View 1: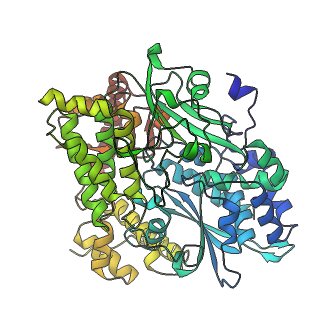
View 2 (view 1 turned 45 degrees about the horizontal axis):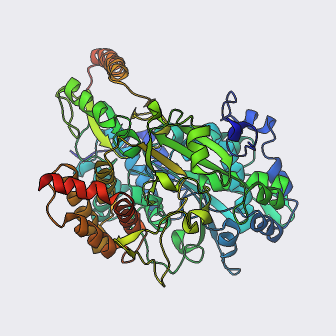
View 3 (view 1 turned 135 degrees about the horizontal axis):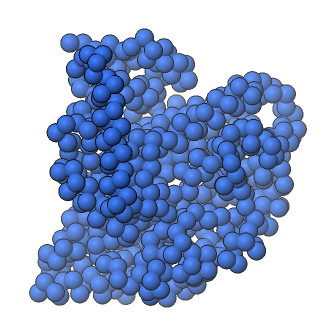
Length: 445
Length: 174
């Protein structure tokens, strides 16, 4: 229990378990809205500097610097929108749903500070359609914030009068809408089709105006950064990643859960210390480090720290290969290892049929491909069908190479990252567990 | 017969329109509202939504068919969304799905003959730490076992029968 208790600074999950943590009165009695009160005594550029200093990085998956993202809003922008991405649907990820249910007011305060900083007057929360219970909780919280005058009323600030509206917008069932430009199209009442970039949303986003899209957890860190300082937040983390990290652990561990942990804890400690080890004390086979879009790690690679940069570069992680001995090229000779993604860690033991597991992941992407780009629309279908027949024992000679060939054909050739989200884990599973795939084929022969 | 929104829904639609700079942006929320009111989204409902928001009917159709939560056909009173994605699969999500299929006598994607249940095989529902799981409306059913599923189905069935019993004397139009 060492990691959780001894070293555990809690920011976004600190009110988990507090009775009625979703009510405004409980939130303010625990110091809620103090961050906003402090924020409006400063000018927006000073707040932006503080967020940059904090090394806060996006918690939705890409890990991009939040301060940097905010700074991309053009100075001459007439209207600015802030959109909170609450469309959590990356398989293995279950943090935002809990954050929304337990502490919606921390999100509303974070959005209010962010809006003041970037100059937004009307912010939107795009919540996943299936989260019907959470939508009710968040809407009730927004209503409370209006009643209390935090929203919808003018505040005197160092930058003149500031008033914010927040609207909750429900999605309707489409994984792709978690991709920020698909989300913007969906919010505009269109099909959730990703847009070509550039222009990036910061320049031309929602309703063709300058737009910032941030994840739930990212925005919830903002009040404490303002209150306690960017330096404080940066020091909690590692060199280039500030703050704490939420990991959602599922699969074959004794204590699955949503844990807020120090940035950089190794997977080994996460599994055997925080989560009490593998069910039945079986040997570990591997894990998915950050949602199903990320290439898996095998049991020999779990001593790396869970941190954005480490997972992309640590030499203890093998390079993902396009075929045996040939590393997959991310472009310009860059190698692919894996990524921290959304923090969804899926652990599997030695009894797991990884071919069937991989086939399930491929069926997911085939189902969720929006259909715009041919390589993804057709390619994910191929990956799903070939992988499924292999798992069922109906594989054909050449299927393993075919899977890799199709995956390589998808990656880098699509408008959005859903193509990579299917291709990378496919190549990752083939790299780390190729024997399992080939053995399935031999059984047929 | 052309459909009409209730007075309450009309009010809500006006409120929704005031939250966005374009009519079109209110489309998803209005479609949710229409589906809640009419039970599904047949052509008549799409026409009504198109007319209400002054949008081309083809656009409304294109949007409705893109999202999995919008139904062109009526669904059961209880929509069981059972997750079978990775985290649930590793902890028996498919066993749960098959158990429900056997108990209700329908396959995933189908509705029971009495209209009480629709069964949907869902993608990850963001409750991975409590796998296997399912949701029904606002309710989460977590850390499922076949026993727990049986109890949940019994409870949902009981509530459904009760609602029907209360609604029946009023002579509900169908």
